[in-house]
Image: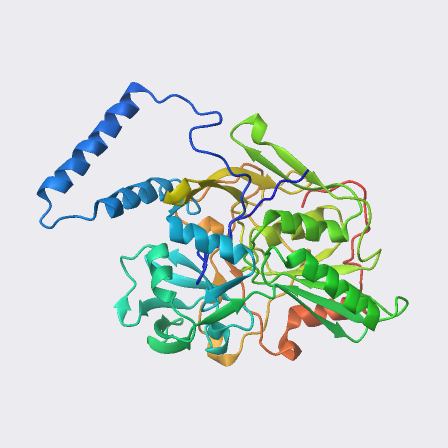
Length: 443
C-alpha cells in the first residue's frame, strides 16, 4: 500500500508554511539511530554551558524557548536548504495548506542572500492580481526590513486576518524599490484547471495538493465530454511554475498517463529507506499524445511527473530546464512542540537518474519572447544548484542551475503553449514525439 507522502517545494506558501513531500511520519528516538561518540556529548555540554551563560549574563532577560527554537532550527538549516524546524503553528499551517485551502497572499517564496524571493505567484490569488511576479525580491514588509529575518519569520509577518492589508516593498530587476499593497484573502487552491482548445485538451496543475488527482480526473472527463474521441488530438499538461507538493499526488498524476512501469524511486542513507512506486494498469487518457510543459519554476513533484513520462517515452517534454529539487523530506512530529522537516532521501526517475541539482531537461527547448519591460531584467530562476548547502547529485551529469521561468499572461504570446498545440495538431513536424516504449531510457 502506498504510504501518504509529501514533497518539499521550492520555498514557502504564504499563509501555510511550506509545501512538503513526506516519506513517512516517525517518532523521535526510534529507527536506526547511531549512538553518539564521546566528543559529541562534550559538544552538547558546551551548548549547555553557552545557554546557561546567556541566561545569566545577557544584557536583557532572554526568551528561553525562542533561544532553544533558534538553536534547533540553526542545526537543521545547516544540513541543507530544505531541512528545518516547524513550531506548533507552522506545523499546523503546513497541514492546512496541503489540504488545498488556507489564508494568505498566494505566493511561493524562498530565501536568497537574506532576502525573500518570489518563486511564483499562485494563480488567481491576491498576489497575482496585485502584479507580483516570479523573481521579485521582497525587501520590506509593512515598513520593516526583511534583512535579518528567517524565512519562517518573514512568512509569519506576511500572514494575517482575511481582508486585512499588507504593504510589500519589492525590488524587480534593476528598477528602484516600490511598494505593493495587497489585501489578504482565503487562498482556495484550485490546483487543477482545464480548457478545451478546439481539438486539444489543456490541463494546468499549479500545485500538488490532496485535491490534485481528483481535479485531474474531472478535467479529463470534461475534456472527453466536450471533444469527440475521434477529434481529440491530444493533451497539454502544463506544469510550469509548479513548485511541487504531495508525492502521492505526483505518483497518481503520473499513473494517469502510464499503463505500467516504475514512476519514481526514493533512496535514503539506509537500505530500508529504498522504495519504488509503479504504475497500475490503465491510462485515463488512452493512447492520445501528451506534451508536458516545464520551466525553471517547475520543481519537486512536478519534476517527478515530467521525469516519469519522459523516461517511459510517454510524453514530449517542452519548455526550459526544471528547478532540480530531487530530495525527500520526512516530517517528524514532536507532539505539542511542532515537527522537524528532515531530508531523508533522494528520489530518482525510472531510468535511475537523480533530478537533484540538475533538473529535467526538455526534449524541445523553447524560450519565451520577453516584453520590453523585462528584456533588461533577470528572468531566470536560479534553481536548486544555486542554493547554499544544497545536496550534490549522485548520478552522472553536470549540475545546472538557472532557467527561464517567465510565462506570458496572454496565451496568444505563449510560444511554448502555442508550439505544443501546433505539434499535437500536426501543424509542425511531429518527429519530436517519442515512440512509446516498455523500458525507460536515460535522459
